[in-house]
Image 1: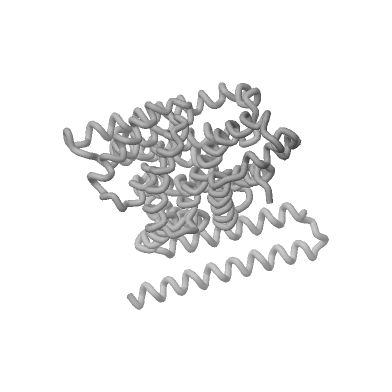
Image 2: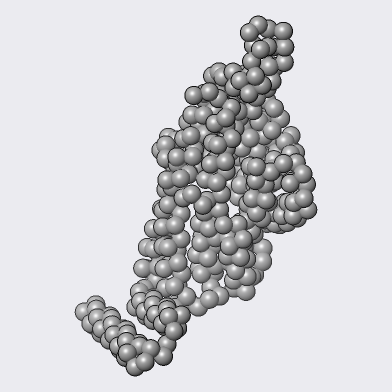
Length: 389
């Protein structure tokens, strides 16, 4: 152990000396007439940093990589997605130096980097990362394994995110129709990936036994039906997934809570708002108990509840306005004032509370450029005009 420590210290000293020599050379070249452009200097500095990172990875052990991978997974579960991505990146550098780039362990780390990117809302980048993981699995262990199927399912989720991201809060029906071809392409490719994964998971599952992988991919398939507006089929997939998860994980697991949230989404799409809110409330209780109030996953449930209260309130507001044509003094109100008065009430108060909570968490935890924050910002501005101060 002492010899190993001495060797590591010597390697670190050599690395520091190399960095100092390269920095000295750069300074000398700049002093001798400034022959290097600012771009070239930046390039050289990046090369030095890359070399230092490579040297550090060679010194570190696979146990160090495992520790970093576990740190990344903990950060991921806490909703700290950038921290998770950084930890996975460092873990990957060490694994590559020891195992090469076509090892299944490397594929698993690349896959987890894709999951972090997915949570950050980066659809295209997560897709490219997942596709790299699929390639490594196919070259190292072949198709048809459980690990391969899991990454294929993640590829489908990247396509799902890209499909969902084609829709903007401010889009009119005409805007969406222009992008429908792109939307349909993404959803079809997502569903194709889910079907491939499901075939593998079902083949490996025990007959007539609940299976978590099958439950997860069925929920993913339900998501595609839901964003397509096929709410009854989404509901069937979600309920199948929920039954399996409760059997395997119990009622209090956050994954069960998320399944309940998705069931709420399907009922909201069907216009059954009270039923949707029942499921949302159950979901919110479960995920808040597990994650706390300021986790992005909890914020997603608040967001869905806010939209549900808005849709529910809009229906009631329309009925109220239609009854005011002969009611004094309401019939003398301007159209804008009638609209504001119609949008008073408990539903719109709860809408504001849930949307505001989601917005605050998104801004704090995900940043202003995340797709969830952008949508929440647009929704906050749009709903501000519906209710009176």
